[in-house]
Image 1 (cartoon, chains in turn yellow, blue):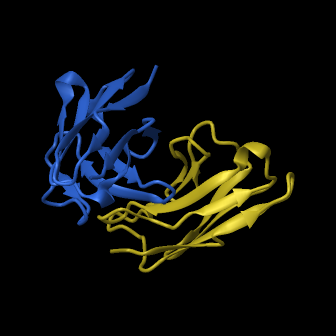
Image 2: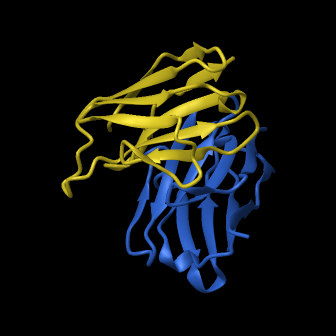
Length: 111
Length: 113
């Protein structure tokens, strides 16, 4: 199974300031079709998760452009340019290159 | 409205069985692969099953393989998760997900004696 490791586990942030979360996979996430299926999800307290970014850097429709994803191979990063109050919660990276799908442990973002 | 609504959760004893349902509305389920995920109380997310749009490919996490069965009825726009031989560690909120981009609110399953 592919192990996903996220850092930091928690991130105290200041409104209006940037934040970043790292995610590392135990093996390359490049699929045989050439795509890299690394996704980022956000879960607010008491809510189901929501897909933010798919295939490393593609924002889902409606996701603000202050969110961006980058990386390649085994190392990936989610960045928030200016944190807003609604961004609190837990962020998960998840790989869908291979079965079983696996998640990072989550990064709690709190103001 | 495009949404997924799970149902069928509840409290039951170890060894019991439960069938979860997921009703899709606002779109045709037949066009999408579907996943089941779960989240134990206070814990992270766990993928448990995938089913292709035609049911030709079905995958399971090792933690549920041989005990859980995923199926779908595209004519009814519904997805199902049959859970047998339930264990305390299956206690979680179970989410039905269209691909990865549309999540239901989840249904809670508690396994306890």
